[in-house]
Image (cartoon, rainbow, N blue to C red; front, side, top):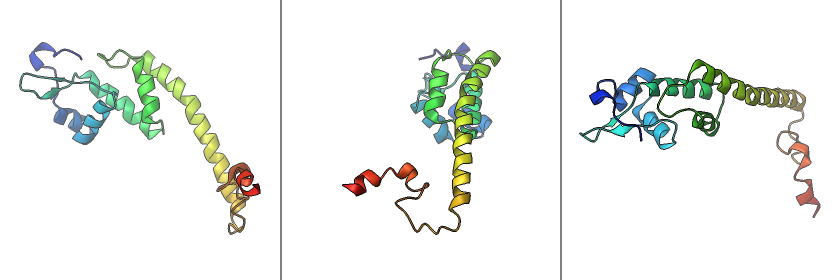
Length: 145
């Protein structure tokens, strides 16, 4: 657990983190429960966060907007120091790592779009052969038995 900083003068409460990041307090708690951010308890047993958590949450929000899963975000953040904000170089490394994932998602969406275009008019008369409902006729084996 990170230690309190300078008598809490630079630490932020959960409400301050939520307000500055424009997210609900419950989301801050969720990110912490998922191991994406860390806090500590002050003498009054209130959660306190270092200011670098603001940057980490910004990275999380940007990654989520691009379709990166929380699991993938956690993996990327796990290699960073937990007690500091990601540097520009670390952000570039994360974004390069995520570009391949995004390219695959784009390719998958393009394929889905093409399949939808060819599907219009069929009326889903053949659920067993439908490339959207039954890709590659994967259920044929269970039907043949």
